[in-house]
Length: 181
Image 1: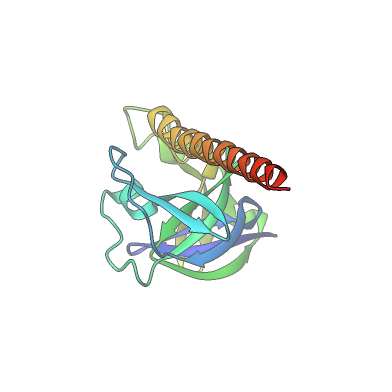
Image 2 (image 1 turned 135 degrees about the vertical axis):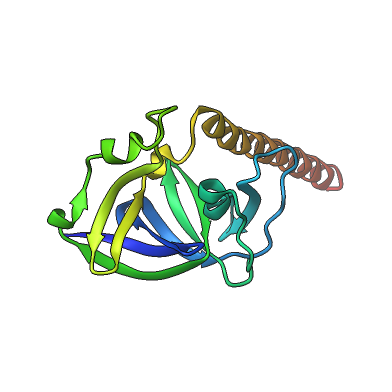
């Protein structure tokens, strides 16, 4: 048995392995980043961390999440870092047996004659029909991977510059205190 987060993206159900996830939070206060792909909603602060937020509905179906107030974010581990994937709704956490999980991706990739790329890891047979498992590490093709990585790099560079400024201010304050003694 494997555990999955079952979620809804538009009117379709998807799963994400619970092993790929950290937590689920409400979607709130997204800061939009200019010149990014439409599926990059922007960045959001979550428990002191700034995370890129990906609209899974826009990514998969080219239709943005309409009701952002009701949307939820699944914080996932992507390429060793955390990102948020926004979904219309998190439905439940569910166990699926190995017999229900089909990893024969040729059944999926042969539908796209232009590429072998797929962001789908497997499909799961359930009493509710077929459910696709999102492959978090393969969420983007090469250009999308580079774009999201650049968001991390830009934020980390900005954060490092802020830290240098804080250190310099602290040093100046210590010098002023020492001079006043």
